[in-house]
Image (cartoon, rainbow, N blue to C red; front, side):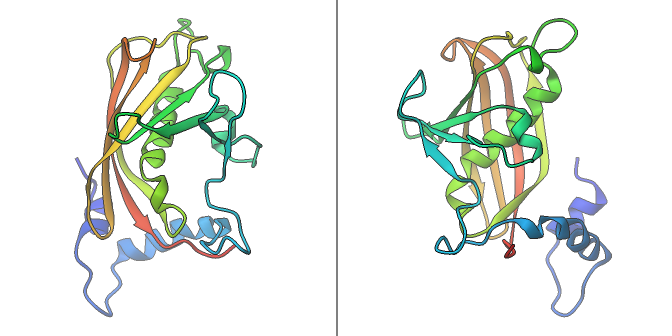
Length: 195
């Protein structure tokens, strides 16, 4: 269910009238001022990726190959490629004890953080010219994730409008044989501000 704040975000805007919700959102988004702009001659892409040339992810691209001092750095290297079947994005992350809960399985907080990463991977082609924020994300936990195995994320765009993007997908292990979670998210496009 959407909160009043999120409903205000989705409501049509009247020219010259700023709602209290939009004022709060501008203030809340002001911390994103450090995001890079789309002009790649002066700044790198918003989500720089490096091509992996050796190891199990050869031919994939890697996000966060170098720490940037942000929350997502704590997750580890995130690998991605276009889904070979042409249905969106395929991502992978190696898991370890730092991703575990007290029962020895993958921690739900880690899984939900990774869902957010996969959602943005699904819209990565949009992120060089604009930014986005997560309005809603829902995760259905369907099986325990095994620590020490690669966690695979798949995502695709379900629908896109001028300001909104709906994405959905799954998290699996063992090459898709073990379903860990299914998810869907609603993202809002926002302007990318110069750093």
